[in-house]
Structure formats: structure tokens, C-alpha cells
Image (cartoon, rainbow, N blue to C red; front, side, top):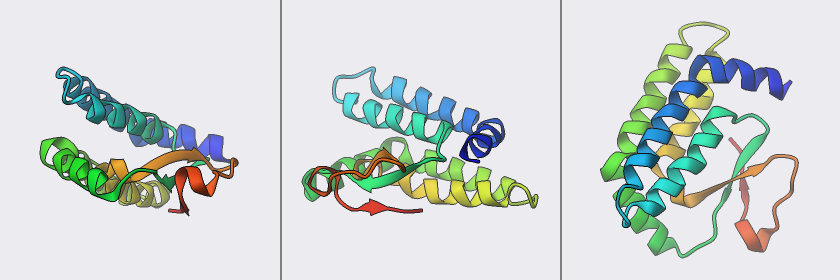
Length: 138
């Protein structure tokens, strides 16, 4: 079932969101300082193209450093990616078939704003609590 959902997602919004994240990652990687932001963007590109069957887990790291990186991310481009998620979610919710995909887009807006707080893990694999923290379901 998740394969069918992923294919429908990819056609409806995954390809456009993936392209947006890839462009953001390439632009971020133009400078040495932007490479950590580019890596996060590439991680998110894979997730937004094929999200079903995966979930988010709290990433390891110091909260202060993740917070600083998230603030810089929001200022540089995260707000625009989050707005894209909200707009696509609203468009998808106009149809009955698109409502679950619109809701998924709304939940991804949070991820677009705070990418350093989350790690993408397979839903079938149980992450070690010491490694990645508690699993957050959407």
C-alpha cells in the first residue's frame, strides 16, 4: 500500500518538492559555510520524494547548536520551503483523494522549518534510542 501512496505522492507533489529541495541544497553548497545546510536539504529531498514507509526521529546533537542552525536555515530558505508545503497541501486538500496527501504536506512544513531536529528513518527499522532519540510519528 505504501508503494501506491508513494507513487501518487510523487506525481502530485513529490517531484516538485524534491526539485525545490535539490535546488536549495545546490545553492547552499556553493559556499563552504553552507555545506551543512546543503546536506540537510539533500536529506529532505529524498524524504519528500518518497515519504511513505519512513518516519522522523529526533536527531542526536546538542540542542543549542541545532537551534542555531535551524534559525539560520529558516532565515536563508526554510521559510520558503515551508510555504511551498503549505500551498501544495492546500491545493491537494481541494480534492477528496488529495486530502491525505495535503495533510502529509502540512506535517512536512514543520520539517522544512526545523530540519536539524529530525532524522529520517525507515518505519520498519527500530532505531536505537541512544543513537537517534525517540521516534516521532506524524
